[in-house]
Image (tube, rainbow, N blue to C red; front, top):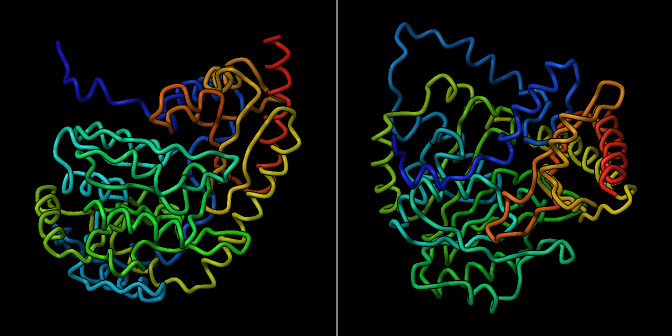
Length: 398
């Protein structure tokens, strides 16, 4: 039987495609340190579960397609605390940030259109683009420049008549870059000049380190009607399984169009929304504590990588990830070998091959993304395991 060209063209997730190897390793009795996926072990705030337990309706009804009013109001208040002003009519609740991203693509692009994206980028952007028949046009950023954007001229040179939007995460996944106010301003100017939308994925807004300051694209008032803001509770509140995201835009006609997609999928799960209401009421001290925890984890991983011969990486300034260039020809082959052939006292490490985070063929082949989502003690063990694994693998390949 034939399958659609669309589905056959869609890449497997580099974050998850090697899971069968990890499952096989566990079946052999190995402990696998999962540094391949942004699944934090930080406890989900208890207020989420408390709110769910208190839910006592006799019928679990469909929620409103745009989301329950209580959650939208809570997000409006959250934005105000971040000096961003959105009316409740400008916010839609989605099934995770993933649905928000796909809805944004569907709303601003036709089949065959293009979206400009700095690479390396969150790998699922590729999958979402394939699903809606939209291609990603990369603008390559480099570790030696801290993964910051190239010049305005280089960005403009990548734009074609079929380019409809600029898509990026800030702080960046997988690079940890925090774009400067000047970079945000530059892209806003380009969007105005070329009549483009900006799809700004800001799910790691609170996770910024070393005195860096996060600048939201929503703060560019003259570009407000073309900025589509994507949010999620997954990493912000360590609630990945709840699948609650949101999309915000000052462009009310665009919101009205996306609302048709929301109505088509009926609603976002009611109970998870009820729990998310309380998460968005968390005090600033919560974010400060979690940010400090991740900064410490970042430091453990970065220090360990710096001490490994042949490993090159840039110190991430935000988010939960670091991209490391390894002294191997093929990072995916190395990661599979770590799972199949290697263990240190019954333990091994799983990472995500970084090639899938690029759109330019050949880039990232010897790179891996490491998610510093485990506690300090486990990260220390995982990085020691990686160091010994690299030694053994490179000796084997000589």
